[in-house]
Image (cartoon, rainbow, N blue to C red):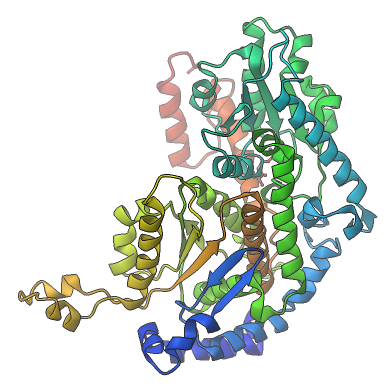
Length: 544
Ligand code: F6P
């Protein structure tokens, strides 16, 4: 168990000793000027300044000792070797092979995977080129103008986020849409105004059984049929991304129009696979390959760089430091980059579905804590909403500031304002403002002083991308994956299963029948039974 490791116990004692120390004192002390250089690391065009953390050299040494004792490097090597690191499902977790080159020679459970990965990438390239060039047409011979990706969770969040990040009004190619929610208003709003003859649907589901995706796919199919597309003609308008060939054929999609992937690709790690088909269509295959290349560069960095300069290792260790030793229940992700507005939602699934567990690899309860709540929105918007709590609230919330050095927008004057705000927030969280400083600023009303005091000592990382392009985004996302892996390795949990989502799915089926009136309301707690009855009563068409 992690908590019995000597480094863990040493970190506990160390955390107690650090309590009451203010980061400002470190910056103002003799080591202050060297602190930024000491706590900065770079890789793959990303620079991480982690100087504004509640850490000293001793903290880092203890954290690296913890990584060694928890055998993080050995677990990483096992993942890279395609061993069954997903122990509850006896599967490899080999998303790194999706962005590799065949000569990298990855194997999942001993089987080489390079050739099949390359074959699917080639299939994706052909299809993306055909759709973008207009060679792939709808039933009446017109080019595709709109692509609707129907999927949820990992079959939605990654592609949706990347398409948002890497496309703008100048991007050529079809318009991209994403539908996830089983709430019909999501699909209805998306389809409104689209022309069936020039619309293409990508049904994206690893299992091809997910309730939301299949319900939306069936409704979309009916929408095409009602608009005069024949059943045979649907082949021009529906393609599938899945591991489940039988279910795809059963739905009526020609397996020739299916883009496969494999059970060693977890949903939340799948945007690099055929799940990224919508990305390849949106930005072109060449730029999709650049996304993979950025991720591959980060994979190489993670595998081969000593912990002291290893970005995923440093970030994963800091996450565990705050969560398990300093009691931080959440972490805020603040991209100062509007195109990255969907990054927090992507990271929520990545980290919380991976590490939101209560038992370790051996099935025993975790005493160390596990995934923090990940949340956030873009800066500067968050500043005018919840940053009040970050500056003066009673909870410790570490922040990840993410920004690009090169402006994303060509509008003059905006980028410096954006960066100035990003850096100022980190500085304010660090320094705070003392009562004496408040008075020195001329405040005479003593009753007001405590309201104007900021404690400071609030930690943040600042991650700078050279620019927002496929390569750097790929590196950032792979960094996030590996950071999540490091957290899980330190907590000694399986980051690759998600049993916690099963129970709710199972209970929804009988409730659906009860709501539809095809079954009586039975065997629920009193609260759930009352809610079902109330919902039934509100549906005039449902049998009572
Ligand atoms: O219910 C959770 C989950 O299984 C996620 O892990 C996954 O990304 C999502 O549902 C979608 O699953 P699928 O791609 O099989 O439709």
